[in-house]
Structures are given as structure tokens and as C-alpha cells.
Length: 152
Image 1 (spheres, rainbow, N blue to C red):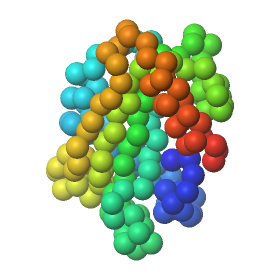
Image 2 (image 1 turned 60 degrees about the vertical axis):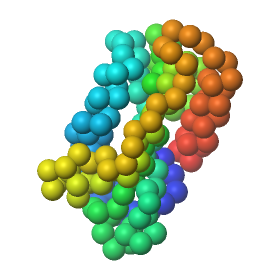
Image 3 (image 1 turned 90 degrees about the horizontal axis):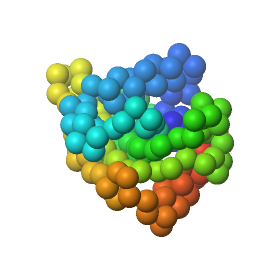
Image 4 (image 1 turned 120 degrees about the horizontal axis):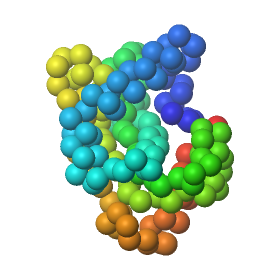
């Protein structure tokens, strides 16, 4: 959650932290996301960058109860250089190798609390098969990553 309305949903530090914790719990609890990650074949040298962005009910729910707001997730499976680390990855134009793009729509913590998969919408994957380099895809994804981290 790097900029814009997602951060504004939880303006107080404790609420902001809770929102982050909820978002993380949704990501690791979603069977739809787990199935997708298993299907594409993550390897030990892959990293997963997840960007949380406003979902479908953002305007109607965000200022009433951030707990029930829906978010979308934009995830990049990448192969990072050996010297990567948190500080390096989140620098603009950092040299990562994007392999796959995963979009998960309409995640809701309320659904998780109700015993449902937090990912209400679909999960889609794009990009060439892992192991095949597509310069156009990599540039497009790198540009999108730079856009998201420009607010950090």
C-alpha cells in the first residue's frame, strides 16, 4: 500500500497497522491466490511483490469502516538479483526481472472473518511461461512498478 486512497483509509497509526495486518492475512489466507501461485511454479529465487489498490466499494465504504472495504491486489512474480533486499527493491528503476503478473480482485477481510475465501473476485495471471524472456512484458510491468513506488 504505497499511496493514494489505500493509505487514507486508515489515517491513524494503529488503524493503519491493523489495515496492513488484515491485508497480509487476506493474501496468505486466500485459497484462490495459493492455487494460482502453486500453478505457476514459484521457485526459491523468486520474489512476490504485492501492491494493494482500492477495490470496487472504495468510495462507499472507505470512510465508514476500513475493515469492510474491498481491495484489489496487483502482484508481480520476479527474479531479483542476488544483492536484492527491501531497500533495493523499492527504488525506482531497480533492476528486477518480472516473470508473471497476478491480479486478484475484491479481497475483503469481512469475507475472511465469515469463513470464506477473502478473494471474492477472479485471480488472473499474465506473462510468458516462466523461463521465457519477453522484453515488452518486462518493460510494461517495470513501468507499473515504478508508478506504484513513486509515492513512497
